[in-house]
Image (cartoon, rainbow, N blue to C red; front, top):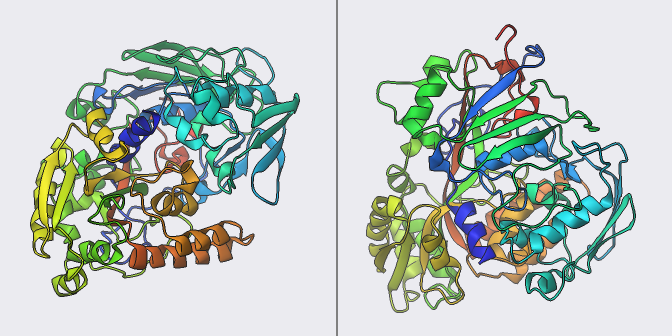
Length: 558
């Protein structure tokens, strides 16, 4: 159930919009808007008004339950984690840096991490942040009553399975030998654990915070802000943590969050009129408003900014089933048969909300190198040649959400040209439990699935391992494909000490996996867009790629 919850959110998350940065992939690039670079800052203080549409779903502020872009934007401002990302625009924001961790060491087999914590962090109730806060945070996520989507990032901790099964209250693999030392042991090598600790699931929480299936709203937190009031589906009030001991430089006094921002058109109108300062929404809508060009209207004054995103839209292939099992030739044939432009034209925002790609690492991440593995329009001759002799029973079940049924019909048409008899099965809404339960149930009866996906961690290892083996996410793999040579190459890459060598190794592995293994057919990278009110000073807007609330500020006199 936990795995299903995670994939339901992760693969069907909100589509975002943006224009590619200059210098990114030349294939399918649409142009770009530069990030403001002024060092000037607006006023200190003031309350920023945030509005979320109910369309984005429930916005949880409990770090054990929250798994949406809207919820994570708030938790990033309230959380203190072992490691984090800097408050700088992407791609520099994807570098890893310590937060509560002062130093760390890792065993040669990559199974044991030892952290020495800083002693200056305090919760908003003045209590110090000790190692017990992280021990409790992890054990709280693992409690079966919580059904946390964060389990997938922790299930390889020694003893995690006992907690999940209700046989133990605490995982044996996490302990605090003294107040400021944390030790975490894994059942297998965990080379990506530092990256995992940047997720809100690993936020320091008070050791007495109870696990809850419904989530906890108001509780002490150790980031620069904390939640002072939470009314589910109504409003959230966030204010500065008076005892914050970290180094993040904050500006506003707090945030008033309206969880009833209306539908996406109403929310867009509120932002346009500066009745709200910021709100997360389906960003493809910016490109579908008749008669309004937001780039021209607000791009020059900084109110509308765009960034490459981290979500991939892809056609996943189920290698646990007969059609694609041990059949890389057919998986490659599918990649050659697809007309990516025609498929994406049917989505929200169309091609304007996308950056076409055929690779697994997004353009904005370190390790991406543009390699023309597959054409963006179909190469039917090549596709038919690869498919010949590998079509098996020719039957394929394609699962799509009801909102994507038109795109599903386009894919059906394209794959029939290489001899596949495709049945389009529209199940549930985008992000709906019924849809993703269909995909993640062991032995599930699907061959192809169309949707959005991200591992939640902006690192090449997380993307590649999740798709060929799932090592970066506790052993989960949506495609159920495993390629020993590719896994070995990735295991070598993650151990390289030099950033340059690491990036080159990932770029080579990405191209090779796309060309030889083809676990999925990646179609595009979703772009991110941000519109703020005229009260927000664009010179302290940081997009990572969503708006970094912790360092936002208001214009002087607003």
